[in-house]
Structure formats: C-alpha cells, structure tokens
Length: 253
Image (tube, rainbow, N blue to C red; front, side):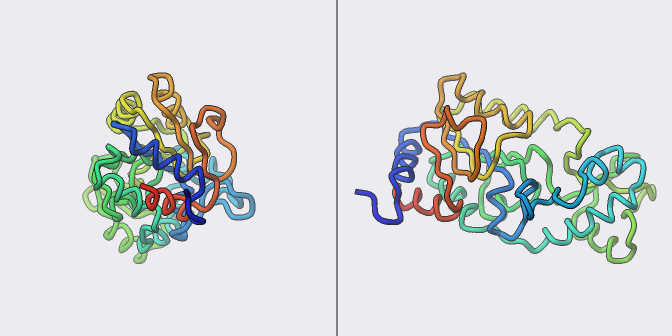
C-alpha cells in the first residue's frame, strides 16, 4: 500500500520507471523554481510578466542594442551564478546513477542538472557557462563575463576583437543548434518512457518530443503543474510540488 507521502500516482510512475528499458527525462523551467529561479509565464511571478521578451531577449534586440539587451540579461546572469540544484534535480541524477534513465533533455540554461550530478545532459537551449563572439567565434567563460559586467554596465566585449558578447543560449528569433536537437530527437525516438518534469510543453520544437516518443510506441509521464497538450496521452500525471512528487517516486522505487 502507498504511504501517506506516496500517492497512487507516485507509485504508478515508479512502476513505469522500473518497467522501462530506455527512459529519458525532459525538463523545463518548473524544475528550477524551488532553486529560486522564476519560470517564464506564471502570473504575477514569471520572468516575462513585466517585460516583452521580443524587445529584450530577441536576437534582433541583441544585434540592434547590445547594451540594452545586457541591461536586462546582466541581472539574470548574476542571479543564476550561485543558484544550487534542488532535490528534484538530485532525484533525476540519482535515477541516472541507478541506470533507470538514459539521460536528461533540458530547456533550462541554468546548468543545475550537471551540478546535481547528471552526466548525460542535453541542453537544447544552451547554457550560461559561456558567452560567444559573433564576429570572431571566441568563447568567454561565465566568470569572466560576470567580471566584465561588474567593470562596465553595458555589453561585455570580446577580449580578442572588442565586439559585444552574446550569451551562448538560444534567443527568440534563433534556431536551436542542430547537434543537441538531433541528439534529443534520437533519445526521444528510442525511449519507451519520456518523463516530462516542470514543463508546460508549449515551446517548440522541444514540445514535440513527447509526441515523438508516443508515436514510436513509448509512454508519456508528466510531473508538472498546470495543463499541457499531452495530459490526455499521459500514463500518469503528478501536479503537486515537483520536489515532493519526485521524492515520493524515488521512495517508491
């Protein structure tokens, strides 16, 4: 019998994970909220609640006004530097350590999955670890970018050619990099279970990945608050606190 902290849904999800041979995890912004990182769309709290992303987080905005772009992004970068993985990240890393999942596909740029110990992490939207120069192709590590931002409030500049640096993350108006996206699609196509955590599954092309697994004969499981396009396809959906839900699933394994 499930304990008080192990709902029927948590027990069912644990069963699905045990039965799977090629499980993969897909995560979105919701998994990092307990680490103190706001998501994008929650009313009253989301990152895009007070700013128009097309004005401050679009590639055209970066090219047109790099200083204004970094005025918005500098605070976001600085706020992410010291954030730590939460228990939900740790549970997913433990599932991989036990050989129960093959890898993690994440929409997040915060690098918290890797900090938690996950090894096979596909960051389809990039990572804050680096910024790049679009002129010479140079790459600058996060610590150096933070140092430059502290020295000057405008756009940090490439040490080699003095052009504005761009975060090595996918902005609005940019295509996702081919290599991580292809790897993500391959994992989803091979998966017999895709566990989607903390994502509304609204942002394409990543939102199509559960459908790829489903169409290949695999199962979908959801651990996320709010509705998703795949609620009707999911074998199980847990919609409580992401840390509590995943802890309960791990306890049921």
